[in-house]
Amino acid sequence: MASTYGAAQVLVASNRGPVSYAVREDGSLDARRGGGGLVSGLSAIGSDADALWVCSALSDGDREAVRRGVGEDGVRMLDIPADVHADAYNGIANSVLWFVHHMLYQTPLEPVFDAEFRRQWASYETYNRAFAEALAEEAARGAAVVVQDYHLTLVPGMLRELRPDLRIGHFSHTPWAPPEYFRMLPDDVAGQVLRGMLGADRLGFLTERWAEAFTACAEQFAGGLGGTRVGVHGLGADADFLRERAHEPDVEERMAALREEIGEGRRSIVRVDRTELSKNIVRGLLAYRQLLDDHPEWRERVVHVAFAYPSRQDLAVYRDYTAEVQRVSDEINAAYGTPGWTPVVLNLKDDFARSLAAYRLADVALVNPIRDGMNLVAKEVPVVSDAGCALVLSREAGAYEELGEDAITVNPYDVTGTAAALHEALSMRPEERAERSKRLAAAATALPPAQWFVDQLEALRG
Image (cartoon, rainbow, N blue to C red; front, side):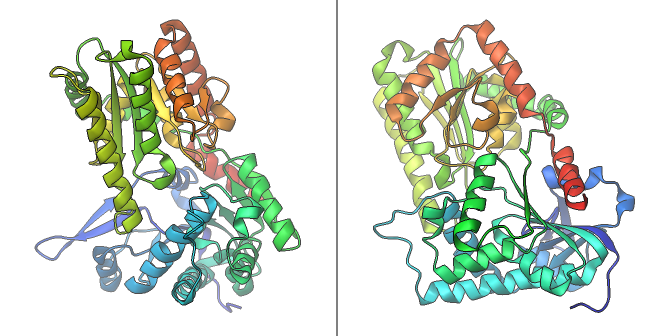
C-alpha cells in the first residue's frame, strides 16, 4: 500500500487525455486541447478542486512532452512504452474487449486466444498497472477517482489494493456483453476483468440494458456484485456548445457547399459516423439503394449524405471496412446517378464543421448501429437541425432507450425494413417532423456532459 499521499482530491483516468502534443519543425512543442464530456465535466467542478487527469502519452509528440517535463496544470501524462501501449490498446482493448462488448466476432474464424493473445494480455495488465500506480501516487487521502472505459477495466481492482482509502468509480462508454457472449473470453481473463471492475465502489453505465448485462456477468462468473454499486448515467448532448458552434462562419460556408452538392429542392438523408465496424454504414447504404429500387419516385429527389470518418486505420479489418463503404457508395452512384444527380455524397475526411452543417440541413438522420453504447450523433442532430429532422434509429443503440418513442425504429440487420423506415421518414409531414424533433432534442439534452460528470462524482461520494 502507498505510504504517502498525493494532493489531488478528484482524479480522472482515461487512455486519451484533454491535451495532445506535436513537435514543430523548429523542435518546439505545439499543445492542442481537446473537447468532450469529460473536459466539460472537470471544468464544471471548478479549478480549486485539486483535480488531476491521468492519461496516456499517445504520440511521439506526447512522449517528447513527458520527457521534457512539459505539461498542462492538472494533467499527468504517462509515458508507457509505445509497444506496450500498442499491444494493450490495439491488441486487447480494440481487438478483443471492443469486439466482445459489441458482439462483432465472425465466430467460425475468430476469436483465437493463443500465445500471441497471452503476450498482448500481459501488456494490457502492465498498462493498467501503470495507471493504478500513478493514481495511487497522486491521490489525496480519501480522494475520488473516476476511471474511464474498457481500456482500463483492471485499474479499479489494482488501485483498491494499493489505496483502500480511495473512493473509486468506473464508467463504461460502451455496451456490456451479455453473459453468453462475455464467456467467450478465456475463463481466467473474464474473471480478471470482472474482479478489476468490482474493485470499484461504483460502476456507471450509459443505459439500464448495459448495467443489467454487467450485473448478470458478475452474478454468473464472479459470485455477484459484492459491495459494488451500479448506476446509470445517460450522457446527453451539450446543447449550448452545439448550437453556438453550428452557427460559426465556417459552418455557414460548408452549408452553402453542401446545398450545392445536394442540389436545389432535394431532400437529404444524413449520417455522420466513424468507419467503425459497429456503426453499420454498409447496410445503411444498402438500405438507401433498396429505397431507390422500392420507391423510384425518390430518384433525383433525395441525396444520401454519408460522412464516414477514418477510425483505427492501423487495424486491417478497419481498412477493409472503409474500402467496402467506398465501394458500395461508388456502386450506387454508378448504377443510379444521372448527369445532374449524385445519389450518395460520401466523405471520408474528418471535418467537424461540415458535420454540423449536415446536421443543420438534415431532413432525415440515419443512425443504424449494430450495437452502440449510446450514439451521440442521434442526440446531436435534433438539437442542431434547422427545420427539424426525422430520426431513423437502430433499436440496438443505447440512445434508443431515451429517443425510441419519437424516432422511427429499425432492426439494424433488416435492410428492407430500414429502406421502408427511410421512406416513412422522407414522407413525414413537416409539422410532425418538427414536433418530433423538438421532443427528441429535449430528451437528448436531459443530462448534459458537465452534469453527467458531476452526478457520478456525487453518487460516488454519497
